[in-house]
Amino acid sequence: MIGVKKKCIGLIFGGESNEHEVSISSAKTVFKAFNSEINKKRFTIKFFYINKNGDWLDGDLSEKILIGEIKNDSTKKQGKFKKDKINFLDGIEFQNVDVWFPLLHGFNGEDGSIHGLLRFTNKPMVGCGILGSAIGMDKILMRTIFSNLKLPQVNFLVFQNEDFKEKEVQNKIINEILKKLNFPIFVKPSNSGSSLGISKVKNESEILKALEKAREIDSRILVEEGLEVREIECGIIGNSKLLTSEIGEVNYESDWYDFNSKYYSNNQITIPAEIDSKITKEIKEIAIQSCKALNIFGFARVDFFLEKSSNKILLNEINTIPGFTKNSMFPMLWKASGLNIEQLVAKLVDISLDL
Image (cartoon, rainbow, N blue to C red; front, side, top):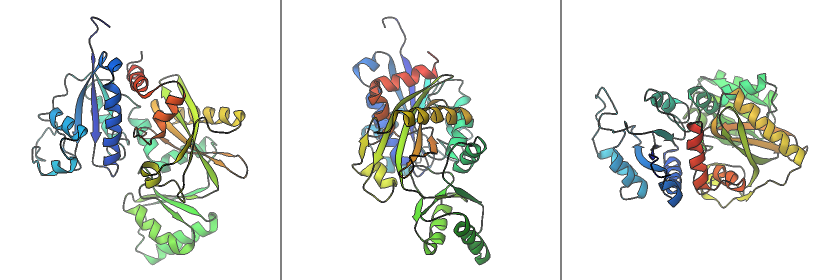
């Protein structure tokens, strides 16, 4: 490595979405991995924190937030960045960044917004591009494409930009749900992550409240039929050639795999999942097929349901910026596949550089 210039990694975290805190936790894990002895020989890190108001902070402040010297909620009073500035990146030194590593979960990040912005810097980035990110974040578009490809999914309905205050609209939606889906059902905002805004509905009386909860996040709503299933997940890395990780299973104590289950519960993780080798092979094939269909590359986590009664595989969704927290499946899946977290983050950079 003597004489080889270190690559400067631009680590972007925080953001305006409802997954702000998850993003910070993910960034802490990734920073620690890049700060390992072996990775310090190859990489330097530059920090870019976006507060909950959408303001970008300079590298020194961003690093202090990441290591805990400054509380992230204190930045709302800084007043350093004015909304009327022509260039909202004024004062942010990003010219020496070699590779971007965006860890912005949720809207304005995982939805492709940050990828579009970073494209103007003409620097490579870890993860997929604008199109794959946008479609992967939008549950309705994703499900529609999967349906056209005849990929197996749960039964679902779509409601877009409906006025739930009107009694006639309420009755129409509820009647359609009752006619076409069986309870329990899950009501989801089309654009959201970490199960935020999602409700499990067990009877007709709970439908309207669930719709209103989802509507607070997105006016486009997905309603899915709930089944007795096992939660199965598969990691993906690569560009033109996609590689799959070991298959993992999450067993949780709560009624369903909600936000608290994902980040604050001691779930039982089994990697590799105890499933038939034929099913494992099929899950990996569908994972690759679904990512290619949405133009998703770099890295992602593909989530599946395995129906308990029939062992039927059902494709759930793709996460284009999966979590890197201590409870996150993506790094666990790759550790079980032979890449520890230090090797994984370096591998993702190499993939972005097409090495």
